[in-house]
Amino acid sequence: MKTKLLFTLFLISTFFILSPIQSLAEWAYSFVVWDGYIYVVSDDVVKQIDQEIGQVTSYSDLEGTFSGNFSNTFFKGTKYYSIKNVNTYEAIAIETQDGNFIKAVREGPYAGSKSDEENDLVVTHFNYANLFIGLLALFPILAIVGYYVRKRIR
Image (cartoon, rainbow, N blue to C red; front, side, top):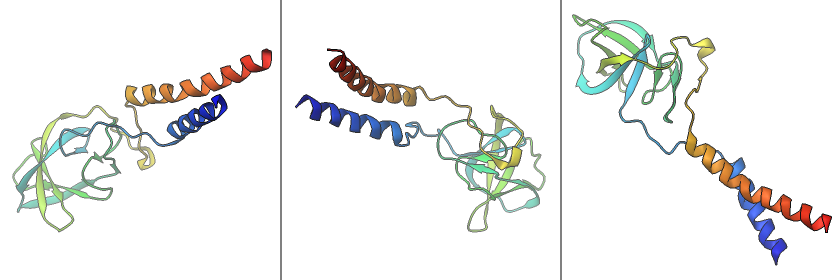
């Protein structure tokens, strides 16, 4: 009976350790990062586009800190444009999938890196919830190992 219980605990623990644990938090708002600054996406449609200034190089819907021209809403390759008669320090336009342009208003500096080595994501956010779940899943494994070590010694 004890062996079956311990084996079940082992299987459950192994599942939790090996399964990908995703962040439980969600982003507070939609944004893009361009030139090291966060631009919060609005619902305002832009009609007068000036010129292309960049594009999304990294996308993720999980919380974290990423490098490059990152977005939590728009996929890699989505283009950024300057708006006629509006300084890019104030706002930029983002091309949507249907070919329209929406305004994104500059909020401030982004905590992530401005560099974008080979367009790879660089996660620097540490998630304590994932650490806790991993340690919690490790406990039954240690209990099983301890049980069998004590059983062998006796």
